[in-house]
Figure: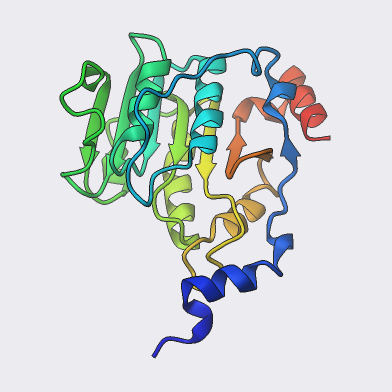
Length: 229
């Protein structure tokens, strides 16, 4: 039998006493983007499935996309495809979204819709071969929401970090205090380590964490420092 602390209810209870896992500074996106609060987000379809991204996190993600208007987006871990569909509905008509997922049957949300032409599906294991045709710094917006184990999120992040553009964004989901004892969520631990090298922050009011290469220098760095202060 598995140890009791690996069971979901036990993990949640025990994680309650480990709040210091979440070490990233928090920031309000309205402090980073002047028009953040006034940008509209419309959800025409509600996400389905137990593993779908919560609506509050979807709204934050979409507002980030609306404020930055990326032209090339990458989603690591697409599942039913609702997040990809929402992104397609909120970016420019000529924007392109690449989704990466392990299972061919996924992507039901946008299949047979008018937005399917904006989405390129890549099916298979997440390896360097999956991105062999992508040039460095070729994506303006990267959303990582696949394997949440420490090893999984570390692998995915290291594969895609070279692909983010100079002013682009990398967003991680499930920066949250669960899954420590059952080894299902190592996002807080990995991002805590990564923040020693890169400017990362937790998005206040969500389970998202975000990074931009632009925050390492100049005016963008000053804005980031002020927002996280």
